[in-house]
Image (cartoon, rainbow, N blue to C red):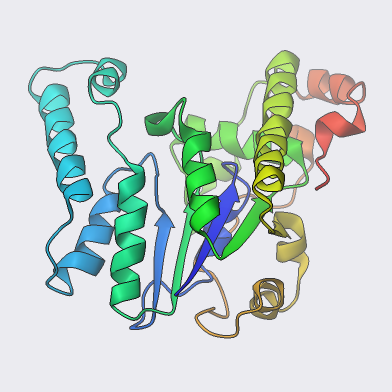
Length: 280
């Protein structure tokens, strides 16, 4: 079985990309954001793999379910803060989970397993250990990134403010959400964004692992996105003609995203090209 993992930063079009891969066929499986902030995603692995095929749930998932139920009890019944509950339930996700799913799909004679990795709070402090483990096991590694750091920043801050993270239909409240420009906040974000990818690429270099780069802007500009992806990853099957995820922002002047637009226009001129764009 061929395992294809996409490694990305939040708000770089990774959901758009991975939704080109069929969610499930008898020969391929799309695990979406495998270790995600939205923990119910893991139930999909239980439902679509173990329950569907009437296979016993492995110990890694039994432990995950036990910890999840504990968290729900602490949050709902005892009204504990999320941060406190997270500290009490560390290691809710384990490396054994990805290994168990991979081994099970292999035993079921699947041909392809797609999933993506994006840093999240449940893996704080150990995320790069998960990236390293998954990279070693993967047959194909996709590095998905967005060239415009400013666009990525705006997208993330809008998602945080509106709570709209995935768009299957146009949402006006996201598109016209106004942010307050903060120069230092953006500088910090830009530095962290670049370091994130440099760390991943350096790790892959040490591991001597090849990788494929898919740039979000290039993918969006391609007329035949299905062919673009097929050519990139050298795979003709299990790729749809289009993703069911749509872009939430309409074309407008970038300063229109900010309440203090004049301050933004003045300060953005002073930023270096490397602070605004990433080239991989």
